[in-house]
Length: 278
Image (cartoon, rainbow, N blue to C red; front, side, top):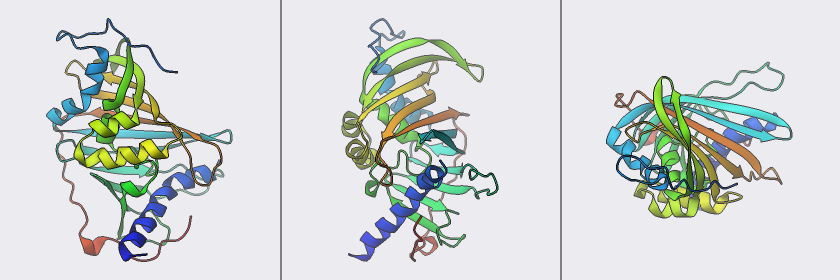
């Protein structure tokens, strides 16, 4: 095994640890043919192009939530940060839940998101606190839609490029902003083919690695077609579990145009040593 292959396996192990830490403690909608906007777009067309609308919006702040249910126990991982949709880079501060006894608090994990890659700091597992671990998203069976504990906001939007069935649920509000609520199902295989170059490999890995490539979703679009909230429901097969794990990933976007200052780690800042097993 080459040094590069060892690095990818070690990094994947650390990312998978975000999911394992939490687990250790524990129908398709019909197409809304009448759902059209002033431009005459169908619901499917509006949802599919919502990722492109985000690129036009340049950037935003984001909060994430990932809920997992296994063995009758539900755990939630939360994140908060900023994202640049044009450069496809972002930063999230991810909070893990307490241990079941409530005695142990985990340090926040800092995550830097980039096309095809995830950088993590404060993950533990024997990694020095001043070092980053780089994970190649292509080495993860879910394309890092789940394993890192937070879904990359732009990848979450690009999943919607695979929307096959969509219906309009109705008009609602999110934080005082009028939105239209759409519900449907996306196909990860289609999303991978339609995604931007930076996310094609990640979504291809997810299409192959999830229990099913059909992803139910709810998305809330504002009057400009920007995603204000998107919720996906994944069926994830973890290597330590025989049964599929139900995972709900929710991303909230707000404060569009917010400044994003993200610098990816230098080579010397990336950990190259041994990572402890989780």
